[in-house]
Length: 402
Image 1 (cartoon, rainbow, N blue to C red):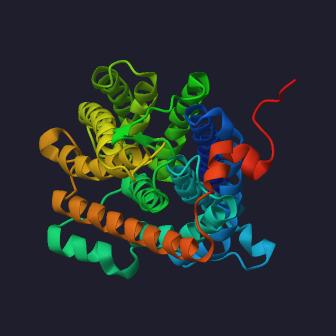
Image 2 (image 1 turned 30 degrees about the horizontal axis):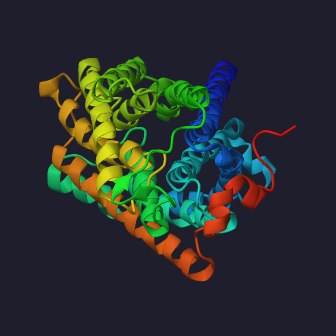
């Protein structure tokens, strides 16, 4: 009896440590979001980029703790500490892990709306998104809420499969960002006589650092999505690796060696492989990542050239929104037995689930940002935008002038 109890305690402790490490790795990814944005925006907006990621994370944690987690999973933490520490506090650490996913939504949006958005209105919108919009869809997919997954399984033989959030996190974040970007409109001076004017990244080393931090943290994002040690899979790790390098190589080729495209290539591949990383053969993951790299480059260039209001500074809509949808479809293809996958997935369920995520995200984004815009406005004045968000909002620049 004592041995059984000891083994049980050891298992609980190991699972708690496992998911805690995953939570810390995903937490570290937010530094990647910060430096990716800092390196991409102009010098006069670098401080704002850093502050947004930090403060968005803070308000996301509070919103998800008190509201979002309950909406998604029906659980709350309004109990005594003695109750919360049951099973070594595994439920608390699971919340921590899933909260870092939820906080990625405002971090994704931040890159799209950079350089012209007001501070507090966008912060309030981030809290509303994490409290209500994101957990609504998260609960539908990862907790079986509202009978959506059960319906898909009864109709098509399998529920919507999204192991680590190609749609639940990334596509939802990307399509929410699209709503915000369209409502904000383009930065001043971005288009002249119908032609796009390139705003060069301020710091390629910072951009690269951000991409590398995100890439490393992503292995916690994907592998630790198993949430317990007995569910860990080396297949997820290797598939994440193959999708990453597929994204790098194809973005290099179609992006004409542009460092911005090359450093977003691995992120595109990793976004796409999240959904089916536990199902695909590594060759399928390589193809999935390669296609995602091409999608990012072509969709980013097309959107910037053809849709004037769609001034998406970091390309978060093609990177997270479109590549996330591709990832769900890819899981339905390369997860099949015929393509060397483990099976148990339906392409039709993958398509319907992805479309549902797009609709919830885009409509939810329009509602939240539309309401905030009507009350307080979303955009800096022309003078504030010209001076830069750093001085206009934070009264300080990224570097001191002697």
